Image (cartoon, rainbow, N blue to C red; front, side, top):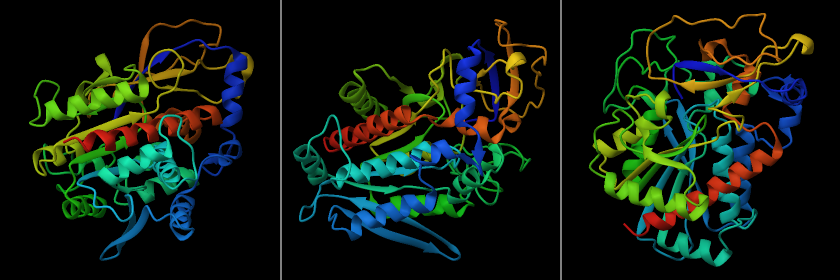
Length: 393
């Protein structure tokens, strides 16, 4: 998500804070309590390759290499069939959004019969994969995800090895920024990054009917444009229809659906140079979308807790609300005298660069196993629903 955050201060009990903080006692970048159900990047690829090696004929691994850059992508389809429709998925453009790649793994596990779905039986999945071929990149930003694992700072975890925000590097509606330290630095020029070229070249070869980019930090189903709340994309009718149907199929219509630039209500912002706008404007793909699959469940928007050093005088946890992308570096500071007993209603600002490694992880990812399992199960089911509906285009 974006460059500037506004913090809405909440009141939680000391017990709740201690419980959350327990999950955030880190070893490297990820706490030991999280390690039992999260997967390092190498484990994501190892498990996908293991599914294929152990006889999952629906899953086919492929390798992309261009110069010194290399990455892996996978195709899911029913063997001995010729699906007439194609869906392309990208995960983990921002490395700190760790839950994204976990959902890619869950999708493959269910398709290969090594994971369960509460909504789709084996016959359903066979039918879907006979109609729609799914190609996906489980981890686009391997560098940023590695920083999440190894304790890099929050801003760096978002960007690639060249300190570029991959999801601002696409040529359509690209917006130049001069500072490489900007969280949303779009690169020296459009399409400059190896990850961007990887996505574009792989999508062009696959010729999909649908394209989806999966993120976290919010919870919503977005369609184009990311760069404008007011302009309707040429594929809006199809993208909205399919988005509404996925929402109905999996979430009972309870998840926000709309133009991506409007996601977040009063905290919504225009994002320039994104994959979704490029796939819409240049590639002319019939369905395009960006999903945000996780936000913290405390009241308000996207909560992240500050680890406690003094439980008797603990800083109040905050909820992060995104605003428009901006170069404004003026931020307010939380009064150090604020305690957990206070109820504070004012808005104060800070940047993600002020988040500790633990706070950063907690902001973008579930920190307990139940939330983790619910998230990957619901949204992998949503991906099957999407593939089914793309099959109607």
